[in-house]
Amino acid sequence: MQETSHAPRNSLAALTLGAIGVVYGDIGTSPLYAFREALAQTAADGISRGEILGVLSLALWALIVVVTLKYVLFLSRMDNNGEGGVLSLMALAKRATGGKWLIVLLLGATGAAMFYGDAIITPALSVLSAVEGLKTIPGLGGMSQSVILGVTIGILVALFMIQARGTASVAVLFGPVCAIWFVALAALGLWHIADAPDVLAAFNPWHAASFMTSHGVTGLFVLGAVFLTVTGAEALIADMGHFGRKPIQLGWLSFVWPALTLNYLGQGALALKALATAQATGAPLANADWFFIMAPGALRAPLVILATLATIIASQAVITGAYSLTHQAIALGLLPRMTIRQTSAHQMGQIYMPGVNWLLLAGVMMLVIGFKSSTAMAAAYGIAVTGTMVVTTCLSFIIAWRFWRWEPVWTALLIAPFLALDLFFFGANLLRVSEGGWVPLLVAATMGFIIYTWLKGRRTAQERTVEQGVALDEMVSALAARPPVAIDGTAVFLTQDLDVTPSALLHNLKHNKALHRTNIVLKVENLPTPYVEPDDRVLLEPVDDRFIRARLRYGYMDTIDLPSDLARSPGLLAGPGGTSFFVGRSAIRFAARPAMPRWMTVIYTFLHRNAADPTAYFSIPPNRVVELGSQIEL
Image (cartoon, rainbow, N blue to C red):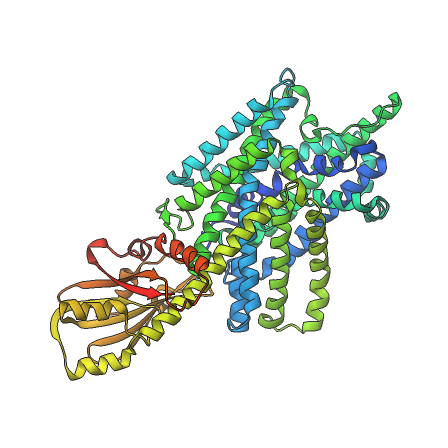
């Protein structure tokens, strides 16, 4: 458990401020809607004091147990050479189990699939809930929903359109803006706590337990809404590689957690005060937009602007997280290659993936137009997040048992309460499937199916290639006995199996009747570790005086550059005649005896055909690439 990080070596204070602007954006905007939505589940017959304190107690203890104990103090120690997140946990668990446990791959794929459901809901819900605050500004209470939707859509479209330009130039503002946001949360909370200090009784977990035992099924619906307070907790470990463990822990424990706690207490205090006023008039207490009415009328407009900025930053963090997760998934073989563009010359983590960007925007637009309000959309939020949390808890058990070498019984006893709580939250959110919870489940199921199809198709294609191929050692012996015409230069043949002659090599011999003086059969391997030191990436195994087997190894966070990394080996590419890279371009055909169902082969063929150009993905100059086609029957 090394405290390693590939974050810049800045001061702890600077890294903590940066973490506040990126890591906590999602969970930091939850006060906009979490307390309101949880209390709304109890509002059928009016809201009582016990319900206010019960909901508030559930929210406070969710922050304590789920975020502070599980993520900040426990899971943050499960870094994979400084990197965190569900796929980093999967990679670490694969290392711990020697890559032989199928359950590890299934858990990682499930967690990744669930994340995409979260990635389309977060921008839609957070920005829409902030813009809805316009209705609380004096004089704007009659604003139509169509205007709210128009403003929301305009902000979201602009946000996704600027992604191609990169966010490095504005990212420096994220930390200060979010710091102001959390100060505002704390200040508003303190102001109202002073009016109703009895709200501090919510720290007593008896109120949470009493509420759950006395409200039956309604209590489960409330619990599903209370979970909105901890959405975004995954970012605490997913962004460890950018900031390090200590800045993330320090930012949460000393600043973000207290600010969120004070704000939720302030909303509860405001509700208690409103309840007292309602009881004095004999009327039931109606639910309200508690967050925005905490501010006096003169400050509502600045608060709406600040909330909108905070939700944009939260959405940016989720969009960037989707790029990063997709990049990792491609490197780990879960998804086909996609176009990846660097948007910053100074920060390697600043990438843009156009395919992911526009698919996310399409999903976000459908949600905003389909649900029309943050209240209607809130039911869709929890399932994806709780599903990912269940996955991370299961992976943490495998890591603690197999990687840390903890006793399995004691490990199970430690993990069991976290897993039970995650499953309880997941079950509570499943009750809201018909209200919109089906959206993230549909997205996750679609992504899971794509991942499964890609994995199965790749494995089947590789098996067919081995069956139809020629052993490399046999080919080398045959060429040594009857050598073809030799030409100057080095040829690099990309392959997935170093024991089988690459199809591009066979086609080159067949059509050109010549062989380069140096031939490198190269396999690019992605290791279950985030980074591989440049000097350790190339492994060479001479076959004879003209052939070399080579392995080029990358971590799942590394940027791939084949020519530069091969050139690090002295003399490997230094001969006369230059270097040419031969890439096999496979076409999928239906076999007489299909290895997969036809419909699955059609989908795999589509994914295979639309994968990004390997020339760009491997950073090979186009004028040094020779593509030769072949056919694979599936």
